[in-house]
Image 1 (tube, helix red, strand yellow):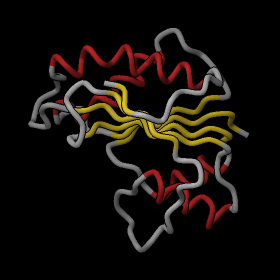
Image 2 (spheres, one colour; image 1 turned 45 degrees about the horizontal axis):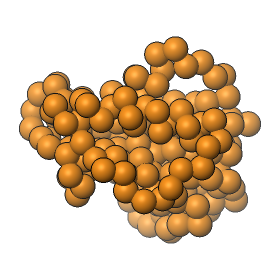
Image 3 (cartoon, helix red, strand yellow; image 1 turned 90 degrees about the vertical axis):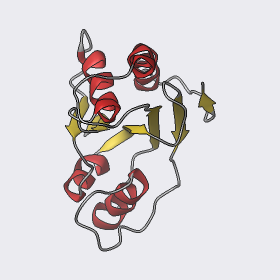
Image 4 (cartoon, one colour; image 1 turned 30 degrees about the horizontal axis):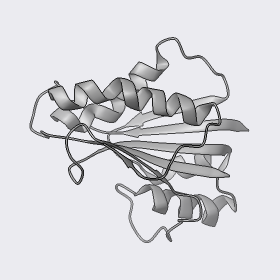
Length: 157
């Protein structure tokens, strides 16, 4: 059984959409835990449900245009499973948790969504200044979650 799984979603060639991938790369520098599985993809897909079902902690990391650029928002997802529906493309964290429950009758004890507000999602491989400055703080939040620290469920601006 995997203790933890981190699922980073984003396109590194669409500006700030690659923020989650950069956060996970920052986490991997100097962090080694064989019980933490790290998955990086341009979108979350149904095949991730099995790995999620084998984890005690799931952390979804993504960029968002819905919060201010550089803001970091952490939301607990426990108990927030959505039915998987009929999609084969990209899934929300809640739908992936629902799929894990439906197919494997198990979800992680704890699940979180960590989002970073993006300024630009245009073509390019550079993060905006505000997002670049937020990456270390987001890495620290991931480390805190992995170490078992309980963080507030409110936005962190």
